[in-house]
Image (cartoon, rainbow, N blue to C red; front, side):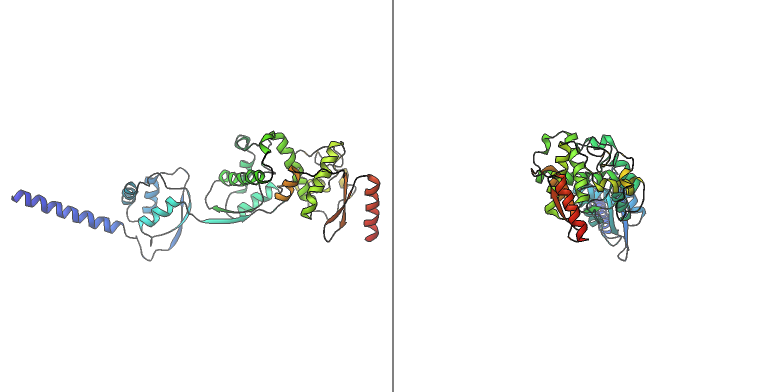
Length: 336
């Protein structure tokens, strides 16, 4: 009987100690703790995460968090990213946040018609991805092949929009989201795109990038696309000023010109669509929905020319014959 009483007493003391320890370690480490940024690396396992949380005094015990995760069956559910944590949070609150993946979010807006290099700069300015890492990912042919892209880069396939990203994502993860959005949008206005070859899709993306830099009124984008398709069909040079501007700003690294000169039209470059027939080698920008839809669903017209009609509104003349085009040019010059 004495032995039984002693064992019960020891068990009671042990249970009390366990309850006390559980209560102690389940509390916050510091009620006055300040908020800090804590990063969970991609592929990082719970023991290492818990150890760093203890080292940074965000929790009282790494072992307790591991036991808690074992009980809650969350051991393998911790998600990478950057999180706002505080020692004023309990271990369970920290666990739930890291499992939810609701880290620090960054909103970034990619405007229509900008280039890959400019997008990389925007992402770096937003502290979302290093510009050089993003550009490297955008030129990774093995990675791009997963996205139906056989080109040398993702230029043209990055859909302009506003995005919300978690801080701490890899450049490839960010690029994946941008490319996924491109195909999601493409599906909405061209459901049959999967019947096209990668080269056919690429050619339409190239043409869309030119339309993007040429149109100002959305209702005119399809007509401009039709002009370019008609010129390609008749083996006529596209003669797009937008491609010459691309040479000046992106290849030569100069400021955007106020106007294109005759000397500019004679620049020796495969992107010069005044000197070379057919499409330029690559997209000249990343087109938006209006231009993409125009390029993938062009109307049937007989137009071969277009000319700016009103600089303020961006309205154009559209002509079937060169004589009409010249007459439109004379009218435009008279108005000026």
